[in-house]
Image 1 (spheres, rainbow, N blue to C red):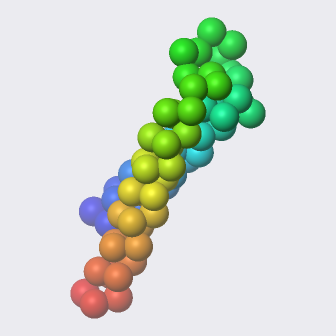
Image 2 (cartoon, helix red, strand yellow):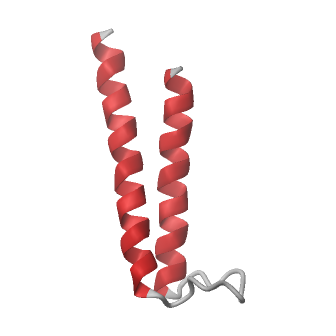
Image 3 (cartoon, one colour):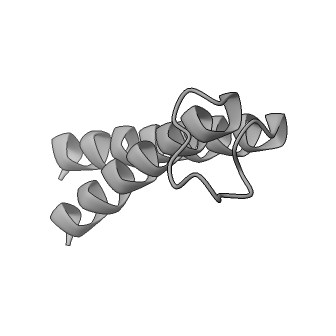
Length: 66
């Protein structure tokens, strides 16, 4: 079950980084995306990436205890 949690956490981080890239305009793909150069998506991406890191840290600490 922890492996699933790690995968979800990693996907959250990767998706957050993509959103940051699109929101900042550094990753303009697809060209018709509504997220390109929209600063709010940088914020949402940072929040999602941070949440993914928190998930992975919590799971690693639970693994050490259990």
